[in-house]
Image (cartoon, rainbow, N blue to C red):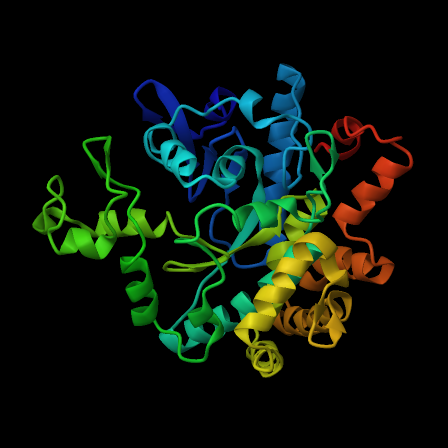
Length: 393
């Protein structure tokens, strides 16, 4: 992080620890187990997003070589056990989240320290626009989980999943994870999401840099003066914003829509994810065509499909169709949307070039997870350590 500071990134401190960096409208943070996260700036085209990712990875590579370290784009730490993963010294993690995850049981600590995702964020222009985009995003999240599945290893062995990261999230914290039933419906609204968020337990309220544990209360309790430490009249909009950032549904609503269903992956996958969604969400014809398809799916079918995708990838079935067929259908819809945007790069190519990676995958019927499984059983001779030389950036 000090190397990034030399490249004009501005540090944010918590006591003596650097916990974040900012530059223009982008930021870099360390997640609980040291996962290195770039939160990119709001950009107009996928070409710009891909260029930003490329520049970031280029700089990261220069730091890697100086420090003799490497970065791996996978959804779950493939070899190391939980107890050997170093803890990033950030108060929110050490004082609130780690104790709470221990109390809940399940796999919350694994989620925090050994999983890694890649996300893409999209804006909306009205409540109706938001509703349509949320409805499609929630229904299609399992398809994206299947397309970007990339976590088949656990502690040096195959784990029986294509997206073990996705499965881990189902064993983390049911109050704030998963796909909301209301998001799949046609009547979703800002008010409905607020009503949901008010009922979610509050991790903490931050005062003077200190984290006050509020897990015995939901946000509605705090507003109704049920806490002895936090007075209702002292609650601020920043407290509400912080609370919304602790909701980890697979589609998260803020002043933008956040897609959270994909495993971290290779450079090409990092560009493909925002491209896939932009083609669907940013073209009205593509969005309406998508709505007409997902309207035929009910919530229970979507959840059942999602649970099967974690293990079986796109071989999972929704109604009478497998995930490969559905993925190809929506890739075609996305392609039409990207073509209609007519955003060209310097050599005259439109944004569809960024989902060629996904077309190749669907054509071969081989996700990144399946490719890694085949390498493990074949060329790697059951040695997961080969992943570091094979897959690192």
